[in-house]
Amino acid sequence: MQKLSSIHGSLLGHLMADALGSTFEGITPEYLHDQFAGPAEVFERALARSSLRYTDDGQMLLVLAEYLTQNTTIDATSLMHSFTQAYEPWRGYGRGARALIEAFRDEADYEFMAVHLFPGGSLGNGGAMRSSPIGLRFVDNFERIWAEAKTSAWPTHRHELGIEGAQLIAAATSLAQTESSLSAARLSELLLPLCKTVVFQKRLKLLATITNADEIAQFGNGIEAHESVVTALACFALFPDNYRDAISHALWQAGDTDTIGAMTGALVGARIGPNFAQDLPTEKLEDGQPFLDYVEDLANRLFVASSSPLGT
Ligand code: RVK
Ligand code: MG
Ligand code: MG
Image 1 (tube, rainbow, N blue to C red):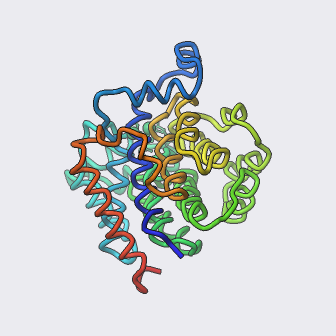
Image 2 (cartoon, rainbow, N blue to C red):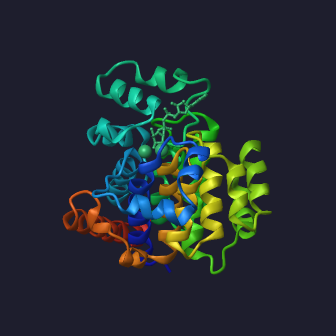
């Protein structure tokens, strides 16, 4: 039985970790590890910022979550229309995503660019960073989650790795809500049969073997889906019930900290609900209480949509 608190926790967990992670985005592990004593200290530094803004990760997440409150299935073109309407370049989008949104907006050669901007299309983590609402909306229906996650990535990500990264985060978000006991081995066991690419299969097999946080770094910290999605799965699987620890370790990876943080936050939040925020300064997010009220209202609307018979 899906809970409203899972949806609220996941959205808030993603937005908060995206904003916290943006503090260190692009930094090298060497520099970060030289400047801070450990993951907890990095987390505290991010929390100490006077204001917290979500980035493109949060922006595209909110668009997709809103879309899923109003539509029973995703249409790639109309979703791209929604991304374009909500586009705020100052939030810091991926190079390809920016070019595609602007091409779509300006009625330029968007379709050709989506296929050819990068070899085989984009394999960036932009599809994965926004796909968790699909696991909230279609919880426990893996066939549906896999298909809708592909369509949700399609407007900007045509490469099989960009798509499968989105599918894995959406499926993991569903598992975060339903599996009573989660570990790296269990998460790997449940996700592996869904996975079609050898690249992700290899990484998921490796995920099954990890038992401590020193082993997270092997999964990468890059902007590519295969260099960040399993990293977030590892942070979640090692600390599935502890937001602070999971996000601290996500940030400790350096590199694409906002996105690894956001994906991890969506998963832990889906599992434990929004109470993790009680000792965190969420009022620093955007314009404070009005924004927090908006997120709660969005969670309510997504819950109503997921509970409708047409939603599954
Ligand atoms: C700025 C080789 C490829 C590739 C391919 C590389 C925001 C490119 C968020 C590209 C996330 C980058 C992130 C990101 C999300 C993609 N071969 N390299 N086939 N496909 N790349 O541009 O939405 O931070 O270097 O599609 O996935 O916080 O620029 O954008 O960290 O991956 O950007 O892919 O990015 P894009 P995105
Ligand atoms: Mg970002
Ligand atoms: Mg990022």
